[in-house]
Structures are given as C-alpha cells and as structure tokens.
Image (cartoon, rainbow, N blue to C red; front, side, top):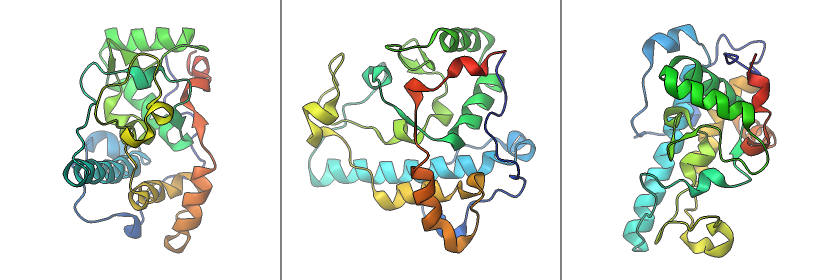
Length: 218
C-alpha cells in the first residue's frame, strides 16, 4: 500500500497556474477530469508538465533542424533510469503516489511497490518496469528534459560527462514557467512573485535515487 499524498502543503485548495506562467501553444496536456476535480493540486501539476514538454519539444525540434542532430532516445532505452542522480522536486511526489495508487494495473503496482521496498544504493529507478517507465504520464520534469542525440547511451554511461554536446539543453524560460505553475504548492501563488518562487523551488531539489521510497509503504 502506498501513501496517497506525501508532503502536501497545508493550504492547496486554490492551487492554480499563474497566467504569466502559461505560454501559448502548449503540447498536449494529459486530462484526468475526474481526478482533477477530486485532487486540487493535480491540474497545476499537469499544467506544469505540459509547459515543460512544450519547451522540450521546441528544443528538440531546433536541435534537429538547426544543428542536424538526431534524437537517440527511444523505446526500451533506460540507461538514464540507472543513473545515481535523478533530480526530483517535492511537488512531484503527490503525482507519483496518486498514479501508482490509482492508475497502474495490480500486477505493475505490486512490482513497483516491491521495488520501492528494496530500493537502495545502486538500484535503478523504482518506477522502471520491463525497461519502461511505469509512471510515464507523471514522470519528473528532469526525466522529461533529459534527451540525448546521435547515439543511445552505453550501459553505465553518463553522456553529460562523456559527450555533453549530445545532451539536450532545455529552454530555460519554459523550465522556469513549469516551476511557476506549481508555485502554490510552496505557498507562493502571487503573480508578481513567480520569479522568486522559481528560485525557491529550484532550491528544493531532491535526488530520486536517494529518496526514502520505503517510507511510502505501510
């Protein structure tokens, strides 16, 4: 069994994405209408991911067209899921818990919970199942923006150190707006304070591989 909403702020009942954080022409936003009515933090989280996905799509398109690069990431490519450092932010935890609790099949959920219970140093991401992300719809923003060009990563390779020019450089404005979309999670919902909120959120970074996933289990 998994806790449904770890680390939720005390007041999140009016959590909305600041208008200034929403650029035009967003990538398709995944809809969960019934869940969004029931979980007041979910719409802003999904907005945030749509903004991040848009920035990534534009950055990939520009790299392919302007620099003639070819994206190498694809199905069954999971080297990045074995990295010892995977950024994670507190506002992403409720989405992971919700999706694990309510959206996975019983078989996949059981496997993820087992992996959470055994997760430790040297383990791959506990949400990795059969070389694929079991929580892909709500995967962290760091996973969304981590894209590699030219060739797939070799086992154990960290291309940031071996071939940094092949690693996608995210568009900073979109990443900042994605963070601003969830400012209310941190009690910073004012339009005029969103830049301050972005700095605050970036300072809350965690390591997915070092997080205490065992604490999710009862």
